[in-house]
Image (tube, rainbow, N blue to C red):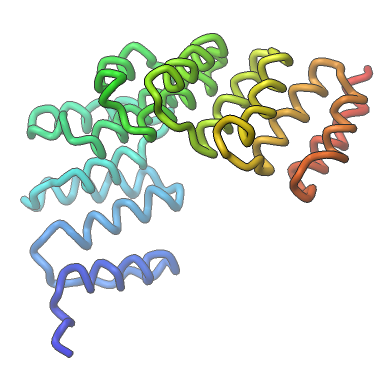
Length: 248
């Protein structure tokens, strides 16, 4: 068929092999297959390997694109914040600061580390934010128990007319759980479908069960389990097994 040398065909093949931990070498002189390798290592949890490939790519003279940066930043974690900051500096120097993919990846790194000041510096103005940017912001607030800020951000989404998603509510309900705000959590879980058309999923329900249990509302937590619209799985059973310990 003659597609053997097409970079995007190679990329698709490489993604398939990479997911099976099989890495083939291609003779391509573009950054495409290397970006896939970086992203794959990052998503497999091998952050050190992803960053090492990123540095090797730079030293080998390959040009970066937004996929290079987003893949490398996906490999950054709390132990490698300094590397994440260095990659973000490269994003700015090489003119990718306005690229939404690269900016979201950098925002996610800072958000995971609780650096909300830099998160807000990177994000575009609210009216220009993608839903992914909003989700990253709420997730960052939730992760570091900034419940009030997470709720305020959700209200801001609603005010500008954006439509929250499944992931938005997972982060929002997680923030309510961490903050111990029962009324708000129950209000959001009820309004998901009725106001925003988002179906309750297992992760939403786990947040509510934990919120009720940790707050001592044990009978309400058990009732919620029996009435929730999704079938219980291991996450639910683990929460339910812990409920009796909340009494002590």
